Amino acid sequence: MDATTRLIQVPGLGVEFEILTDDSVVGPAIERGAWEDHETALFCAHLSPGARVLDLGANVGWFAVQAILAGAEVDAFEPVPAIADLAERNIARAAERGPGHGRLHRFAAGEQPGTARIALASKNHGDNRVLDAGAERPADMGEIEEIEIRIERVDDHVRGPMDVLKIDTQGSEWLALRGAEQLLLDSPRLALLMEFWPYALRGCEPAELLALLAGQGFVLGKATAAPYTMDPARILRQAEARDPVKGGLDLYAVRGRPFHVLGLKARLRSLWRSCREG
Image 1 (spheres, rainbow, N blue to C red):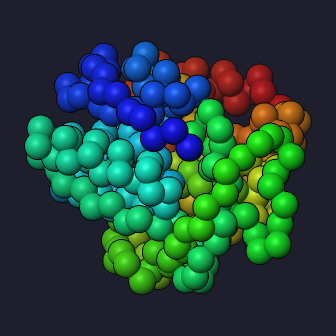
Image 2 (cartoon, helix red, strand yellow):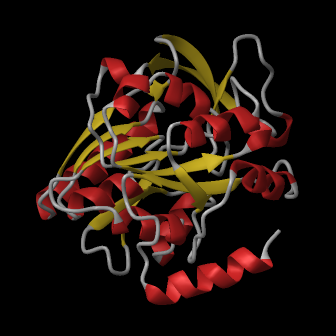
């Protein structure tokens, strides 16, 4: 991958941010100040000084930087060396400006420690996918580069309780959770933001992942401008109605914390959306 970077000024961020020059998705969105804006709003709404945050699949460090600037203590996992280097610099800049602190772990979160191949997308540098042993590259990724990375269990490196958990690992979410069972047990008051992409999901069926979260007491919904609570069947139905490759949902879930955190207008709109959507 081309590891050339540049510094940009992000509207409203208050600190310089470094992006990959040739990235076609994440970098341009951050430069506009609108990368995953719904997820970012929900993420930030659950932050407070001294909060503990775990960011699995940190990529260039967008969410980690938000948390540090809000005064949180962040553990971020990013396995791709060139992207981890960039994320570490962004985390350091945020720590110089904000009251929080961050620590970068240079491996992917998984169920068992070891090594694996990861497929690096040629232009969308947020779409890097760990491959199962012996698996061919995903057909939708086209020509790709593959490198070897380390896999580690979260529980071997980070202790709970956590306040906010963000997981965006391009299909490895189930395996990341399986390696963080003790941390989850130790985090009764937890806000969760997680990609739910059935097409790329590894290690389980999509319904199993939703059942795991519901069984652990999470109130589930989608990460939108006006989230509403949803049962697993409804989430799965909506996810499966989308294009399997381009689709997927960003989940928002809480336990021991308020679900509605974006104000009265968003709460009223969520009621309307809940009645309107299938």
